[in-house]
Length: 314
Image (cartoon, rainbow, N blue to C red; front, side, top):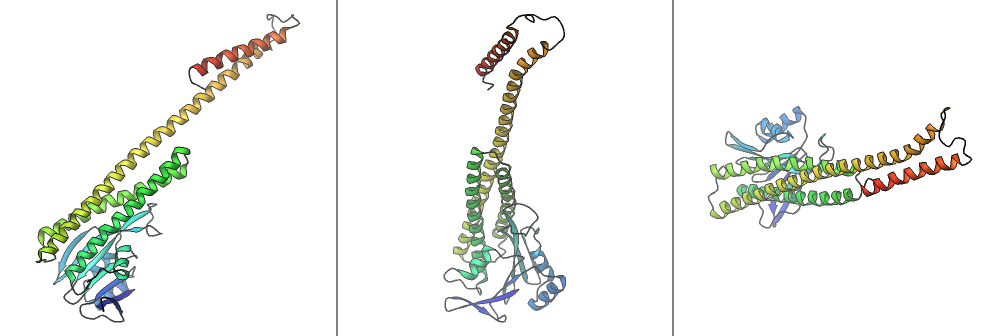
């Protein structure tokens, strides 16, 4: 699907056909034939489209015949997008800058592009390509920060559940959050390298000092999001290790109690087994033989129980 937007009356107006200075957004996925037609329609290299639709494409930029491509990784909820069980994964957004248009390409719907479509900031104008790209960078960092807070809240909720019951379901939920954080750490780092390289080479050809400061602030915010994701990932790794130790210790406690019960129950059985033998045994001619044997069995079992209680085996 391809949609066109242009600024009008302080907002974005959806167009039926592309105009000079408009914003073109492309939603995938496409077949190879559709990608080729789209490439010819937009007059851009087909690799700009295929690379932007590749879910495993890393953050980078390149230029070809006066047209620029920036690939930025953005977070999306994993609703059948990937085979991974991570709650949130990352996909690329392709930003293509041509003399006449600014084009964004993504394989799936994402909060960054949707927020620009539905809630563009005041003064947002697709014709101002520098500002458009910087705004998209900022919204992307905000999206990472939003999902990081959401994942951290879910982590805390699952941890509280594990304190009360060590269910496999809760451990699996924590593992899925851990997978999401791995996506975040990896791709926030590649985004950080991309932004710093854009700043160092002035790939956007920014001349205004305010916009240079704006880009610098975005890089700082992205670095903070990266530090948050690393911190949450480290906390979760420690939590998973701790719960693994707790579960193992609980299992040892259960096995110890079962072993103690087995020993206590074995003593009367052992004594009764001796008196079931067809040989001469003490008290076998006594009228109170059963009472003596039963009493001794119970007494020895009680003594062992008291010993295990003092050793905290029960």
